[in-house]
Image (cartoon, rainbow, N blue to C red; front, side, top):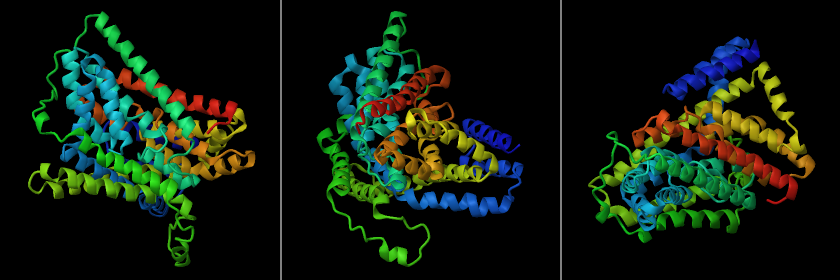
Length: 465
């Protein structure tokens, strides 16, 4: 009965999320449904367990969500993000339209611009270029997904996206963890993704299919001449990357910084400085990037535009963090139930290769797919099982860096199922439907899921990090 309750609540959460209902509202509803079917008292399960775990997540990651959203909004409103996208797309031209869109998204994402902002910044130029090259518009979402939701989101070492930050808090690693595995995995995803999209383009061309007669959300680019130069526009992105690298790899953090706060017996204090260096470094880097973006693009903001951009970014981050925190709260309620012990035992008993890597990859992938969120699914998985995976890894001499990279890449695997918020937003911005374009997005999902197990096999066979 307990396992049935968990499965039922998971199905309902996924169904309601797909139908557009707020996870913030319905995650606790279905968590309590599972709790009631297991005999757990409802009100304590909500206020003392669900909310406690949700608040813990907000404490750990809200600064990253907020500053990342503000940085993206400033880059968008100043025209700096559009300038970079326009420069890349124009330089490669219509002959390499798909590659142009993928690279434009990749540069922005790796530079710290949020995935949602990248979609809005790149789409107008992508649509214009695809129309000029007479490539089916339905291939735009797949191209944007490859550039934004895959190799620069969670595979390449150093990416400042939240999917690469979360594991640092659990494993005491940094965002450059397992760099060789990340580069190999990310590069292979890029190559395979491009091969798929080019195959689809050639197949459509052979069938005589062109851009198509579209009227929904067709862009009008009116201000290309007024965009800042790309050389100036890219400076905030480089600043985020450079400052993050210095604060993570070069600056010597005092390991005693937390002692005074631990002595105060404050709740939720990190166990060690190494667990928060990744977050601290990114906070400093994003503040520097935001400051430079404001200075460089201030004159391009409309009157009152700075306050509007900063406020919109800050307010927009609340929805993202609360969605994910609600999913984490849901996962912890489910994890407290007796039926979950059977599920977790089955997942921990996946001992392919004699290491926790396959168990970790499967667990994170499943939870990311169920929640429709890379950060949400990974956070639930690591919150519940990171200590067990770390202990297992320590017993066999496995580096936590590999655990980090596998968790990060696995979170970006099955997360892009049809109910994923980013997928729904991407299709809406492009004026297309799941029927039109989801097959190509799903192809990217299969490729990036497959690559997680490839890098596990590569590490098992060679030992490289």
